Each structure stands twice: as C-alpha cells, then as structure tokens.
Image 1 (cartoon, helix red, strand yellow):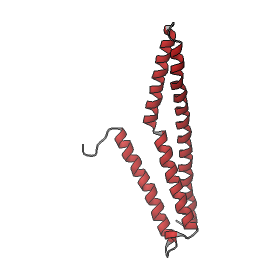
Image 2 (cartoon, one colour):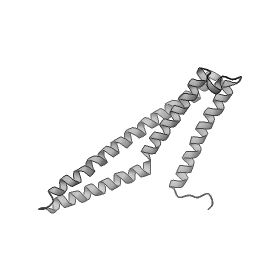
Image 3 (cartoon, helix red, strand yellow):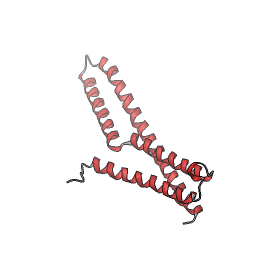
Image 4 (cartoon, rainbow, N blue to C red):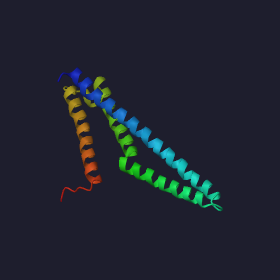
Length: 145
C-alpha cells in the first residue's frame, strides 16, 4: 500500500472512526447520567408530599426503579469507558500521524513510514484485543474452561 493511501485509507479512517464513536459514547453517557441525576434529585422533593397519599409513594418507588434501570444500562453498555477509551486511541493515532508528518521524535529515522505502520497497527490491534477480552469477560467466558 502506498504511503498516501495508507495515511488516508487506514490511518485517517481510523482516527475518524474513533473520534465519531467517542463523541457518540460521550453524548449517550451524558444523556443517561443527566436523566439519572434529575430522577434521583426528585425523590426527596416527592417524599415531602408523600405523607397524605400513597400515589406519591408509588411514584417514588417507580422513580427509584427507573434510576436502577439507568445505572444498570450504563454498566452494560459501558458508554463512559468507551468514551474515554475511544478518545484515548483517537488522540494516540493523531499523535503518531503528526509526529510522522513532521519527522519528529522516533520518526526522524531512516524508515519513518515503516515505523508509522508498525505503531498504528499495534495500537489498533491492541484495542481489538482489549475489546475481545472485555466482551469475553462480560459474557462470563473463561479461557481455562
């Protein structure tokens, strides 16, 4: 693969993908957390009015259950972890790209393109392995079984 093609088709596409996924995960995390905060803060207010009516007590119970559902959903989907992980990988790939383009650091060498490809593929491969291991753990799989 030519240098220009690799930079555009592989590196730049990966940077865009991780950037997009980071933004999506951040947005979803903040939406769910905002809803959770609003719901949790409504419970003390509702409890003030619960003295004379059981309807408010039921509403408080439903809101409490709703908070549990949101928190469980966040634990399952891992929006917060994905947001941070994707942003970290995106910024690492950008760093490698700019170091290569400016021939600085380790890229001030005889074979900077080869080094770039090795590092970028290592970063992507490591993230893919982390994803597989995370999904294996979340499904309760164990390699020793």
